[in-house]
Amino acid sequence: MFSFRRFFFDAFLPAFCVIGIAYNFLIALNGEEGVRAHKLVRDDLSEKQQELRELEEHREWLARKADMLSVKTLDDDMLDESARRVLGYAADGEYVMPAAEFDQLIKRLEQQTR
Image (cartoon, rainbow, N blue to C red; front, side):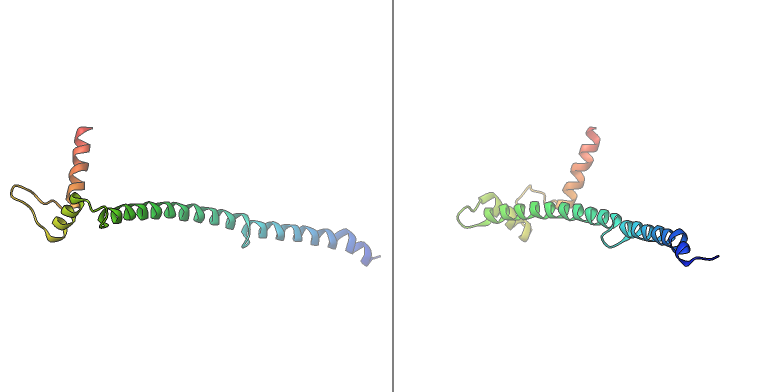
């Protein structure tokens, strides 16, 4: 004879528990706060920290350059370099080379010396 109580405790309840455990396992892996989401957030955090370090270095470089251009500590060489670059002046016997061309020349020389 069919017993509802026996069916509930022998079949339905264990099956329901297995399904519930499987569901919670999948949510723990793939949910908004799951393992994969945590890894994505960590990767994004490391990228942002690297970007922050680069921006801080660039900010320090700009601060040093601004300090060199201040009236109190005006460097004659810096002033001369800035004027020549902006105005395109060159004295007799000097060659004005764009920075990109200069960098390429340095790379070529480094490769030749290896």
